[in-house]
Amino acid sequence: MTNKLVTLDDFTINQTRQFPKATGQLSSILRDISLACKIINKQVNKAGLVDIIGQFGATNIQGEEQMKLDVYADEALINVLKRSEHCAGIASEENDDFVAFEDEFSVNSKYVVLFDPLDGSSNIDVNAPIGTIFSIYKRVSELGQPVTADDFLQDGTKLMAAGYVIYGSSTMLVYATRLGVNGFTLEPSIGEFCLSHPDMQMKEDGNIYSLNQGNTIKFEEATCQFLQYCMEEHKEEKRPYSHRYIGSMVADLHRTLIKGGIFLYPADKKNKSGKLRLQYECNPMSFIVEAAGGMSSTGTQRVLEVQPIELHQRVPIYIGSKNMVKKAISFIEEQA
Ligand code: AHG
Ligand code: MN
Ligand code: MN
Image 1 (cartoon, rainbow, N blue to C red):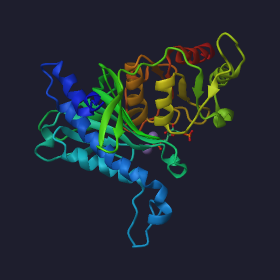
Image 2: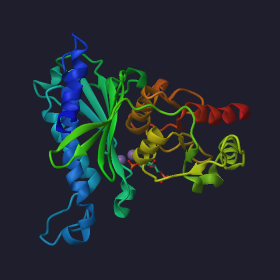
Image 3: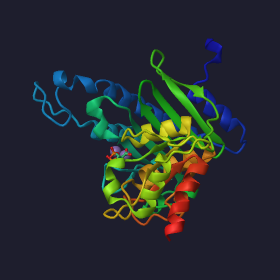
């Protein structure tokens, strides 16, 4: 049994060996991110103890300020990546601007990392799954200088790697490169992520749709029509489909990756760009889903091809099994 264990490190070292020119720097950043996520995981596991040790964001009995879990996660990632040999800077959903690491090693590092440190934070109180989403780009600015905004405003086709960690019934890291998508489950007794879901592939068809249906009153006509289609009876196509929505993008996408289906956060009459962030949520998830054979669109354009203009920009998203995403888009095209 033990000799079948492949740790995240074993796996990335093996992958690197396939490319004689690879330097292993990307694997090293991944190791750092996975370390930060193990630190976050420990704290997430204590979330149920807030009544005993104090509410996150409030002052505990000892008079110490309890850090909010999303701020804690943000700091854990920043601290680990700052020390990392190969990360030149970061951008996080929690911070207004990117952070350039200006020490003599970091200015010569080749990569930048973007992350949503804690996704689905409204689920903390109810013990439902939450996650961390990350993406890695090669910088475009000159080596030897601190990174610039351009390094963080690259479109998703330039991604080197992306992944997420889901803090669920078990803790799992899903990691994608152009070579494919692999899932690693945290073995708590040895503190290692171990390969548990090799070569994850997305089903072409699915029968689950996932969106915040409570927003129906605001939806555009095309979204309403697609929703109607999902709920309609059709024996051969096994409709009506099932509706599942956790309200944590990581958890909803993780299910979609494993079981097939579609996840959407569309534009609506009030929010013309939807809700989810291009650089921290939509691009990394689109990269992962495409690497697994799925599809991701804003409704009118491949998400990965959207040119970011600012760090915190939002885009509508339709992502998941190819045929379901194509179907949703067909209603948008009809309306146009
Ligand atoms: P975050 O917790 O990082 O702010 O993200 C929450 C996001 C995402 O995880 C989820 O898909 C979406 O918000 C849910 O939004 P609604 O509550 O509007 O459905
Ligand atoms: Mn989020
Ligand atoms: Mn978040």
